[in-house]
Amino acid sequence: MRAVLLGALILAACVPPSSTPATPTPSLPVISSATPTSVATPSVPSTSTFADGGSAPWPVVLYEGGGFIVSRRTESDSNELARPCGPVTRLEAGPAGLLTWCQTVQLDVAELRLISLPDGRVTVLASGVYASWSAGVAPDGRLAAAFRLGDCAPPAPVCQTRAVLIDVASKTEREIIPSSYPLGATLEWTALGLTLFQPECAEAGCAGTGDKGGTFVWDGSTFKRWSELRFVARSGDWTLLERMRSFSDQSDQRAAVLRGPTGERTLSAGHALALSDNGETLVWSPGSRRLIRYAPDGRVLWQADFDGTVRQMIGTDAVLASSAANRIELYDLKRMLRFVPTTPILSVVTGVPR
Image (spheres, rainbow, N blue to C red):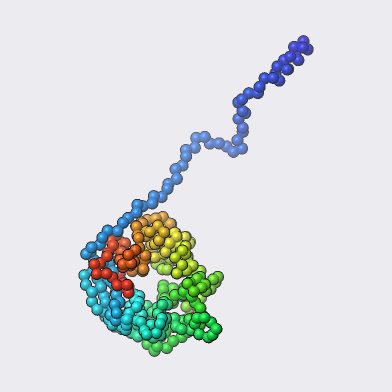
């Protein structure tokens, strides 16, 4: 009997274990009847293309500078508006009229004039301002701001720059940026008031590092820092900003930033161009060669092929651009039309919406 039991034990030890594993006990309840939830993926609209505008009405009125003459131009005619000074080297349209720079015999020095619209009356703003720097005029035309030559004390290799606020009626000036090196800075009247933007870097060096760069607003006595980003536009409850480092560096990775009732959102890499009352934002993406319109939540609402360089926005729905062949073109974003007039648009040009 003992031999039989011993044999049975030996036989049991030699039998291989079962290949079916024990079912583990889950630590959390498993709901086997759950139905997978589908996640909606927002669809990206197809890419649009601009049709030839031909002889269709332009969405804007253009103002061109040719020699000593500034002309008003539409799709059908061109008429002389004013002879402010000359030769005219730059034009910018604003609520007060056309801000006009005129060449002088002195290098990088200009005469600054204001041409009222639509009558073409010319007002002298200032003489001896920097030609290659920005300037601005208040919406009511009573004040102007411009950059002038600053200190030139040796052994500095280049002269400094200062900015002044000009009373148009009396021609008295007040210094608003002391003599220094505000490299690449811009001055303009925006929805914030008189606004200074100091980029981090320019071709000649970097003057806007840290809290020295960004958007600054004049409070009547000094420029106060408003944001580290560049202010672009404000409409309703929305503010459009741009994260950028330099105007001159083509490799700079810019980004459009929208600030509104729900907070702040980076919409896209690219150049922030325009803002609508409902928070829709237009962005130019040079890398993808497209113009893109975004909803406030970041969705792409519309996109179009665009193989040019944006020169300026005219309102929120017209773009003045340079083509790859260096020809000035006009784009109507509402009607999706591209205008390339037989008589070329002059390089000194600006415009106002119709």
